Image (tube, rainbow, N blue to C red; front, top):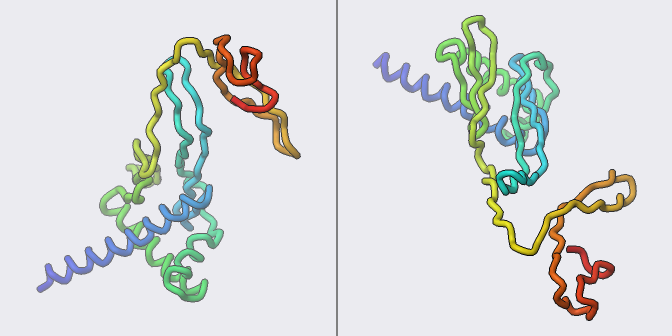
Length: 196
């Protein structure tokens, strides 16, 4: 009877922790910083798509998640998420969140790790410091795209004028070196009317 009760308690605690994990994962898709009060902050760094000329790979835009254990003050984001989920007042959401954080702390103390779904794991070292190990292949990430160079085409960089207050950018566009007609009769591309 006692072992059944302990098993049910463990399942309930795992469900609570999964609940916190899901909130963190959900919020990281929409925000660049999610603070778990008293634990630390998950911070998202965005990287633009790029082209690696050596390997002929287009690298997709990506998001890297890091963890800062020094940022522990409550900004209310997680508590608001809990309040919305449970359709309750903010203070009630904060109370539910604090219970889940206590369960996370107990889990770290006993198992030395806590998984954040689709993001990575929190780890507790021998000095009782929390660190973060991100997943190598986060959920929903795009794979690099291989490019095969086409004969007669060369890739060069062309400046683009800034619009309003946006900074000047550069785009990568193929420049055709062929001399065959493209419909304007001059034997070259009509760059005044079209972007290539």
